[in-house]
Length: 91
Image (tube, rainbow, N blue to C red; front, side, top):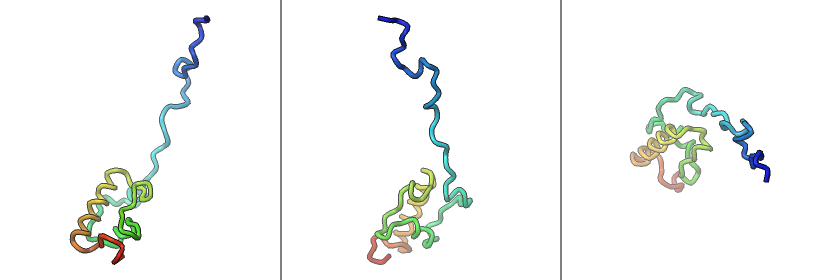
């Protein structure tokens, strides 16, 4: 058996093909400079919901995790206050 063979491990070759990942993209919300999502802005919040009343995901909205939590919190507050419907019956 030849002891000089590395066995195909990419780390032994010094290969830098798999370092890092995709470049972070600019979010739609941060591009506009929106720092706070207000529950009273029901027209903006309505665009962040499906026709059935579900909150769109981060991938669809283009928000990061912190902004998505802020959007979800604002939508839930607006629903509780009666500014947004819970279901699609009144959308």
